[in-house]
Length: 555
Image 1 (cartoon, rainbow, N blue to C red):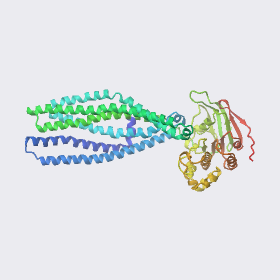
Image 2: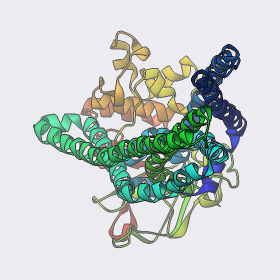
Image 3: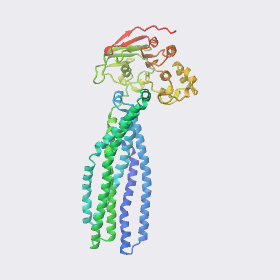
Image 4: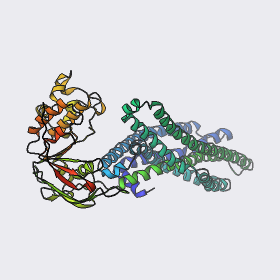
């Protein structure tokens, strides 16, 4: 576990954590006074020595009250700090994940990422603000109790003091299986989350293929594995707690026996024996806390390593030259090379040009690289050789945010949010006016079906637009892209879910909407191909060739 990494994450909260620590230390000081006062009171009662018992009892009650007040304030400060650290760390991780390269994200399980920003963040925060921060005062209580016990009776205290390191060794032996189990539990939890997330996203397919029982069994197996591993871990941890209590109880009984003999011989007073016993009892809290800390440390260790690994991944390079705004939209592909790991090269020496304002249809067989070319243009992936130019500038050297602001994408799988139609259309331009949203809906041929809805543009469409048909979702996604008014528009099968009549209307409306923009149209549909000024067909290794634009008549 990297101490530097942990301190870096906690440094912004140092004032609140320091205040919590000071309050804990004050509590610890109060705790160390209690056995002495208790010993004085009990000793006075037993020996009938004239002591101000009432004053001592009042002091003891005041001390307990002080402990209660300090505890309340400490808990308020610590809980607030803990929740703030969790929220800020979760937001930081989410922001970092959004900025990571798509090729890295594609290799990760969503369940791992969801587990990281939810369960593992909470686990790590609770470990730091609870176990670690809380153990230092316990350690001070342990040291103070040992010093005071040695001061009261060194001979009686020595066996107890020497037993602490022996207990620590025993604790390590008992807890040697906790660390691997903690890692397996983390993986099992992430697996169950991944299965649930995946199944909920493809629920229509599960229902249509009557796989409910199969998927329910698969999820149940993953949950049971998580349960079984957790039970194995708790079985190990269950041994430690009772063992600590048994050793502590046995030690106190031994102290009582030996201390009673010392009192009988006149080597200790009754008040000293009571104080000694109370200090021995105090030692059980930090020793038991060490057992808890060890178990939580193994859980937090895996979470911290996972977090370190994710945060160590370099985000997409975002800074660079600012492209001309608005861009003209001329695209040049020079000697482009790209391939996926373990597979033959997809592109090798590919080169072609798209003039500013030109509409180019990109076609090719499945696997020819159409989607990959789109990813490279959007800088979702990085070419392994060659380069892509925008208006003569290498896109790899451009400011990423400014570059992508010049582009809009209508993917084949429409990514809609669970809001209203208007929310989805203004997704790329939150400041857009109502009139601009209505214009974009009209240009995307969405105005007709929107008008028929009870709430029009304010209709809530559900997660991923589930309350709309495929063609309607496609029109909303297209309106979103048109509202952005990009210099370059990438349309991936934009009419794949349109009926022939709707496609014909879209083609007519799109002629005006796309005018003056550079458009890359990925499609096989002849009715949509007529929008193109020319067609680029990707062949083997992505090598392009120009094809004539077909002439299509609409009845």
